[in-house]
Image 1 (spheres, rainbow, N blue to C red):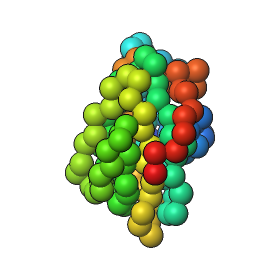
Image 2: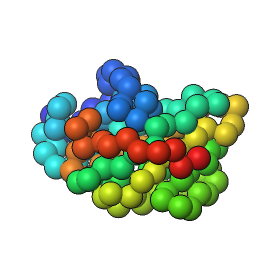
Image 3: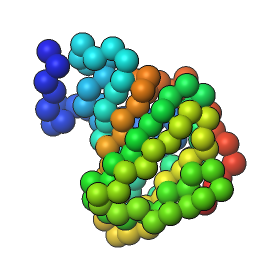
Length: 123
């Protein structure tokens, strides 16, 4: 079935340390080439800087506020912002607010720990 309710999805930590719930992915649906997850970064925390050799991502901010680093650039992100991340682009996101930073993460191909490479901090 390709209808999944987020409340049925268990949260787990990704290699970059964000907490995610995979909403649709090859692991839990018939979707074969992409994944959609809700990611949460707690107040005062940041993900590890990293890149994905194969995966293209979109972060879509739902709530909270943060600072997004993409290669040498950084930008404030707020609800309604979307950030496109190309394969091999180093990136990192930090929660700069007092509430959880919550965003959707769309990945093509689907997210896999093995496609995450840690690098030096960007923030």
